[in-house]
Length: 264
Image 1 (tube, rainbow, N blue to C red):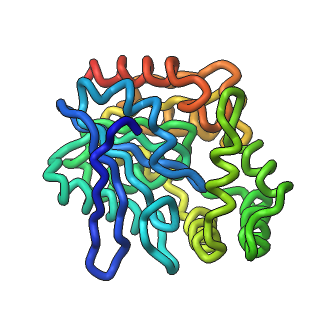
Image 2: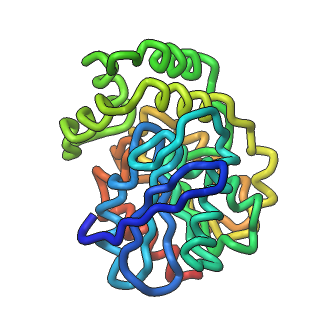
Image 3: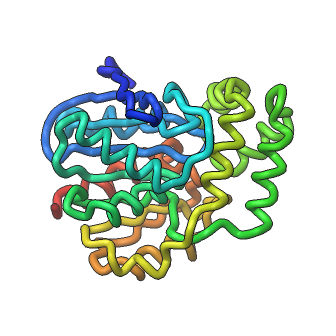
């Protein structure tokens, strides 16, 4: 981030949440990252929006600079997001969630619909994980002790990153992730409940953005969100973009979000 105001929120009996609070202007944008990532993944978005919007990027449990060890669910993460909004005196915000960040933001929109002005589902979905992927994630987490192997790093990078993304930066980050954090994060993701049948309860305008080459979440999952929410303002497919489309194709992603914000 560029000159962020970094803060921490210590939740009673919960995590110490790290966040960056940058820029000014309404509506505020709250950015939630995906599995294995951290708040720095949104630098292209914060740089673009900070002159017109207050931007808050935060680290979820088991990730980045947030301090937490132990089991949790994505519903817990959604409550963390609401607590962060309370802490920052933000009544309503636009939630931008990438992958896991979208999954938790859906839950935020269900828990407190009056707090969510708009929802951007970036490389995300509403369903459960398929058994094969779940088993692979669990095996990866179980063998993380002592750090990930080069093959593991390459596998994660192949699922998430893409052309133009500095994989060395992310490989170094993943090498530094404690094994227990990885196990807790993977457990939260793989044990999640299916919200597909609850998409009709999402009350806010919603935008779906997805890369056509996403190797982690299929386009059919994104389309199910677009078709299922009552007020979808569109589904933008970024040609040839991977899971981390906001990093490889920031101009296309930012433009889609700009158009969405103009409708709110």
